[in-house]
Image (cartoon, rainbow over all chains, first blue to last red; front, side, top):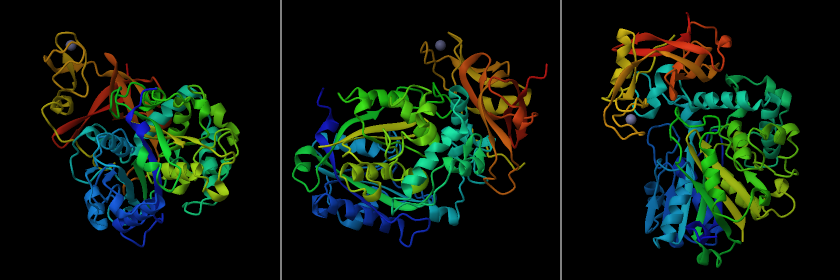
Length: 394
Length: 134
Ligand SMILES: [Zn+2]
């Protein structure tokens, strides 16, 4: 296999702030907590960090979607870095990681601090509500095609795609609900999760519809929190505290119409091309994966990734998740072992990477997957955006 | 129902949001190879012609997918309502977000045949779709 750039990088440390539905610190304060924890976890100091990256970069719009950017964190920690990068035009949330891999390959840095901060719980209690639209303001850009039709949230757009998936696959609500039930069961074992009270399939079926077929339990939960990871050059990584978690392969693609309305296959979104690219960069196969942390902005994404990563056939996820046994902690493919974004909190794919590393290092306590897992598939997605990483403990 | 949020109008999209005044749905079409280009831009990705301009289509289409909204996202929002993607009859990969109107939400279905109607809003005419009447 070609020595793609990601094979010369590894995750060496992880950190997470307190995750809550109403923080007692600022967004920057939470970010500092996560960053310092990740730096210390890697066995590094602030002086060793020579790169910073985030996605999508600072958005000072009051939404809490991304309130902290590279500049604010760099100054708070007084870092001296050779390279930094943030920005939303990337293949989903992991775009920050992919950029860091490129920067390391270019010799610009050796230890990159990558973070994602969200402050949506506080934002929604104050001015912003949960709307994509601003009253009285005309909309520009791609979202303007949806704006006149009372499309107030990404949930409505995702519900369009989800409904088509349900129509084509024949998946039943009690099968979809296994994702929410599984993740709540896992969250009960995660001290940092938001929702720990168990739910049953009957609870799922009784929960309010947001937009057919999407129910409230199919949605991730807005939180205040930050997660951080350190990505290091492999020769550096091997000298650090933790066994390196190699970035074995990444999937990053725009080989489809990158549009919320004109995607070639609406019901699989951007996932197939991204997964295909990832598997094309490794000798490992779906059967080699021990655990999966699959994006769950909506349960539909998780279901779709099971198929597009090849854990089951196209439109076969309904049978794979039926009854919930295969995806449970003790099952053949434990999925979203920390509770995911739906019960753990919306750290927007970075909670998933944190959990992946926690499991691969054997530190997950009561929710630790048995059998010494070594290979984890992780993903991000939402509409036309998607990214994937295969992580392997060295 | 509350006021619709309107788009910023630019050179490429203005026909789409304005031709409804004359009852016409404007979709950009390549004069050289008749490929419909949407969202509108004056370039044909099929034959590379720049001769691409708004063209009145039939206004007929089919529901590719839809959702019935049940959440009151903002005060005074009247729900349920249907958000859909409609493929125009002329070219199945041109998909238009819209509301399906003049139809109970629970009667909307995949592949339902629909036709365009327009609703005035300030200086624009918003394309909406209803079940085919004739
Ligand atoms: Zn042409």
